[in-house]
Amino acid sequence: MALENDTLAPDFDLPNQYGERIRLSQFQGKKPVALVFFPLAFSGVCTSELCALEENLSMFKNANVELIGISVDSKATLRAWAEKEGYDFTLVADFWPHGDVAKDYGVFLDEKGFANRATFLIDTNRIIRASFITAPGEARSIEAYRAAVEDLSPARV
Image (cartoon, rainbow, N blue to C red; front, side, top):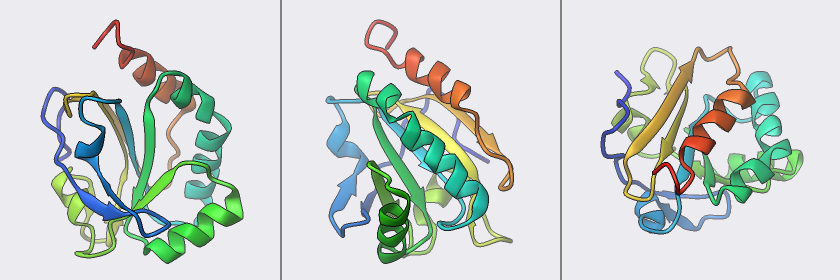
């Protein structure tokens, strides 16, 4: 079962697409995070969904929200995908131990071997303020992101 709103988001330490270590806690006290789990790089729905996030990246930047995509793909796969699609945000590899962070957040699909489509909006205290999940073949809406990002604005947190 996925983590619920108003709970502490588990920390993680994973490589990004360039091999740099990224920890959720490095943003604590500094900026909120939109943590976007997706099944697999180079797949149709994931590509269109993350391209939509790239097209709306200013929504996150203007609200000072760090956008982080996360999947069970390797960092090399994520780098190749980010370069091919022109993603200008962080992608982290929940590759090994396989899907451990997705499991910590309750969104790993054991029967498929990858994470469900799940988004967690995490405030500067590492508290989950909003979350939404769709089936692996169903893209999340930009409007859902917009509403969640607005809820993370400093006046409301």
